[in-house]
Length: 373
Image (tube, rainbow, N blue to C red; front, side):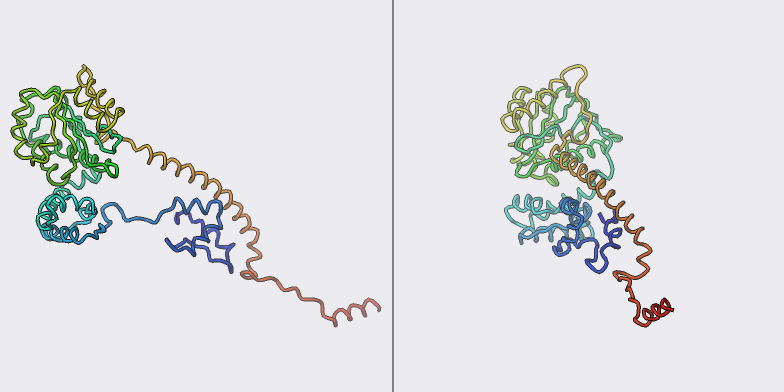
């Protein structure tokens, strides 16, 4: 808000009383200065927040000694033995604990997997941070979020793109962006994301290159470890077994136990039991459309979610700021008029009054004599 220059324009009126300036963040003694702009003052304080470091610059605040040691050891395993700012910004207690707890509280074991995850995130930093948009290949996307806060990732083989030398990199970047979007869409307390792999339209000839599947398995094992709650493979044909034989050995027993081969109806029923009827209806509608001529490829990548609560809060903020802008414009117009009217008086000095000199007795008597004559 400093850029609006409100205190600067009000300075001529605050001389010798309170020096008006931008308040120091967290200094309560300064907050009262903004109350002079009431009712704008309190609203400004509510909507102005202490500036936070740019994304990717904030250091992780780790307090658990095991987490600290895990991160220290992982950093030593990285190229040059140093974390980049982007990598460090991801090292939150929650993320570190996934590796630390997954290795039974052994920092050395946890550090090995964490280091691989951090290297992967650095490799795909541009895509994960949104700095560069991938070339979207398939229909894979975050389709919905359940009542329990768990996002649902959906993709249909009907829109599968064969992995070739020209497309494999783009396919992997597409998947990485979707996985990142799902991890960010997870509500506090949610245990992970549900992944629906709809095999309608599956063709063996289009899936002979295992590179995309191997890349997905790597993401699940390292950077998004323990991020999967349930994986549903819907209406898988017998020919799908070839792909499954390649992927299954790469999965841990824990992950394999999360995978279910189900029919379309069973998938909808499972989603309803875990995420609610509304979410199940969304999944059912999209899968049904994909079994029709037109299909439903989706148009919003990597996620179709809209955070209504956040949008409403942002809109409320915009309305308040527009109201404040109009009021302050009127107030400042009045201030400028006062300043112009007082410009001549200001030559006499700040907060000084012109001293009126009473007529001396001599001049008074002299005037009387002259009048008498």
